Image (cartoon, rainbow, N blue to C red):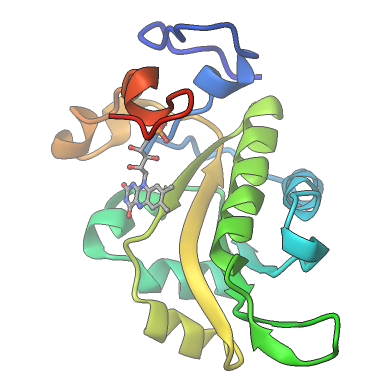
Length: 198
Ligand SMILES: Cc1cc2nc3c(=O)[nH]c(=O)nc-3n(C[C@H](O)[C@H](O)[C@H](O)COP(=O)(O)O)c2cc1C
């Protein structure tokens, strides 16, 4: 597992995998194998979802694949500046409708929430495997959906860069300064007993 960054000190006991996961932009040239990717995708597969619908759909490519280039091409310029160095890119999408217990097609209100759980599972498995991930919302959803022939009824949520941690010195200067593990709001600001926090 990747080490916990020195500036990340949880206030309460948690497994070290939580503060150890963070989102760097510097990736080494080292490739990720298909077998390593299968582990990450398998972790996503075991995420919980409402009524076990498993609405997530993932499209992935290794650097050098045509699919990787297609995904990279959809990213904002700011993300393209670093994400092309990642070993793999994964698109997190989800099916927006579900079949109800009475057999009708109805909107699935939790498809995005559930797919967030799948992304988190993938990210934590990556860290446990010594890899790093970086989620991105900065991409052209319509363009990517068209390029990947995504059928109607699916939403694209994020693109995930996956790879081995790299040297921040390889980043453009503006990004190098931002290559610092982030902090978190104090717990009472986000959780309270019996009342809404804040
Ligand atoms: C859904 C989502 C979208 C994000 N979009 C971007 C993005 O487009 N570009 C980027 O550099 N980082 C992006 N991030 C990374 C976040 O800024 C980062 O996860 C957040 O600052 C917390 O830091 P940490 O992941 O290192 O703990 C995104 C993260 C998530 C979960």
